[in-house]
Length: 165
Image (cartoon, rainbow, N blue to C red; front, side, top):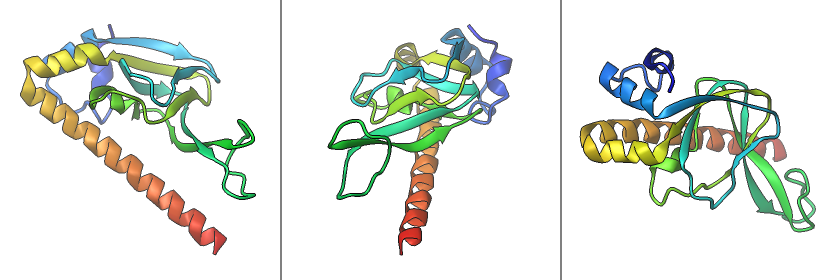
């Protein structure tokens, strides 16, 4: 368990009631991670949602090689792994753990050493069933994280296209 006050320090949780923060804290554990640690792989059913306290997490995707263009470190003759986003202190990742079908759409790996809060998303979904208003509010916050991540990806893609032009 972590302190509800620790959660309150982060913008995602700042407007939540003490009751909800306490319930979330009961579902949470603080843990450390080392550079290179893997948290999940694309297609894996997720059981945890994470908040980075310190360090960075790379969210990657394996893509086929297109022509002669290298898009990341080689995995095989036909695939490259590309970093789609880097998650830093104060940011959530593995939000697919609270969105059906609860499967990861990316790979998550520690880019640096660090610390995180790990929330049990299976228990969290049960909490949502018991308190649908809280579940809706939490899911709305997750949707905003998704929106921001997609916006950032669009901006980076546009910058890449402009560089190539």
